Length: 365
Figure: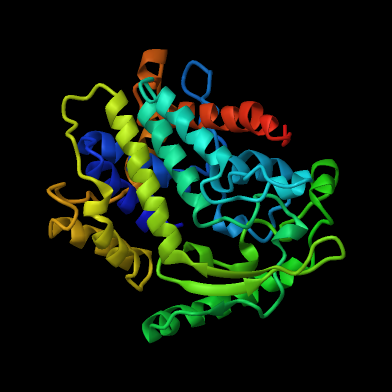
């Protein structure tokens, strides 16, 4: 998923669930910032005790050279490819599944923690990871044969010529860049945690950004191996994204019922906005055009009287992060939104990797 869903859709769904504009902005901003918190080091403040930021994403420019298995386990798995916990082997259990029992447990955890000082930030981070299960299902956040795709098998199925004209050239360029890397993968997950690894078949790199386009209907085949059969996949992103929207709305309703915020309201039922959501999801275009579609629908009261959708700007969070290099007392740091984001990211990662996944037979750290 991209910024149009992780920010604009999340803001709309939060407001429709009855959360206040302020709470919705925090949730939506942190949801999108998961894809942008890439800085591993911050300058040390005057007293010498630096903040250790939790990285929740990777730079696009790092994709080709990414050989860091720790990054796969600590970043890709908990924040972008929540494991489904199904199957006989750890590699299979690591495959992301839509709305899995693991994903549902992560949502419950965020609801339980939402009244903490960093609670809304945790809700935003969880919203990102949970939403991604509806787009990234069928792939895992580690280099694995289970992610391998038969070359040339990715095809568009949209009846709309607009979708084909818009996306086909982009898809061809992206696949030309990633297909060659599929042959240079590690044999399985076990070798990833014990020896050398490379990008290989990491996440959904083999199908480029196909899962991230809300309007796209497409298909592909996984690469077969002696112990892994050929698997054909037909994907209808609009239906997956609509299901994600409905589940996220319910998530935000639960948060609204739990937090103390006098600016919250009852909100509207998802059934009353599902048609408008479906229409926006069908909009063909790049992330900026799709974000504009969310904003236009909100401005036209297609989602009820939720007001306008604020523009997303990474500058505010980056400025807050940079301010952490200037603090002299702890109370100066804890009020920074970036600090609360890092608190929430640490809590989310710890819960997923240390508490939750071991319950499902997955041990990564």
